[in-house]
Length: 396
Image (tube, rainbow, N blue to C red; front, side):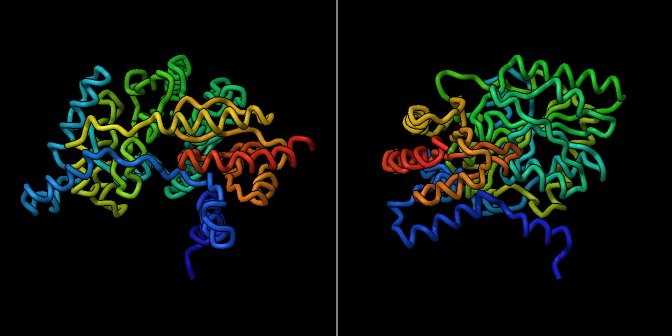
């Protein structure tokens, strides 16, 4: 028999993945070209050409033991130095390799941070809507997830409710900007208010409250929007970064954590992150791709492709009568559902071969997520199906 905890997790397995599997089933019936799968945030933009060149160069010119061998738990020193220098240049900071831990993507980073910080019963606060796996990550370490409900007009952090939610048991707050599923980028004003609140609550309770910023979409932004760099605003800060979206490398599971040197108990925290990396089974971030991302530190994907998709789909939904905030980043739309039950709405959408993800899976019922990281041609072909869906639901 599997463990009781795993039995619950299996029964409540990801809605997103379930919808993805449903897409494959429908494709066999109707043909792939007639199924419009907006369920999974799998980048469709190709990685920069320099990635392929870098892989070949590293494999052909460097010693195999250097490319594939063991390393410091935090990752190759030269790689971490290259990343630290890049951060310093881009954000006017002074971090070093000692602030960096290479990780198996942002998910690996979040898990070793929570393993480092959380005692059973500690509380971790998230802002709805939030990436559903946060619930499982916190549960992994017997923490308690505390949800701040959304301001559905802006989807920025609801600071007044946050003040009520923080207790002496609060150990961490997780934010995600640009946000999955809304595409909202938290403003500098919101970040400053958040930092001020956490400082006040640390003083009130005599505790350390850590801010964890989950940032796999940092580079996917539109219209000149800038994403505030959290280390500048609050000392007890971790940033979890991933190259999954910025370089279209989701299957390579490569990313890093960067920490603020001024955080409470910095040395112990960094030592614990290294040990957590090993005992959770990640051990090290993938060796080849550590070297690849360092070699391609300035590379970027063509964000204009996502912007073109966003504009086509967003404008069409608004014309049909849907209510939706315009994304400033990431590659998701999060419209309100015309009928109250978002799960029923997604079932209705399937009648037109539209695969959408209910907002309740993100802690925000009455909405639905659409991942527009698919081809422009497929989105264009889907527009008629959205028209049928609108006629069937908006008039109700």
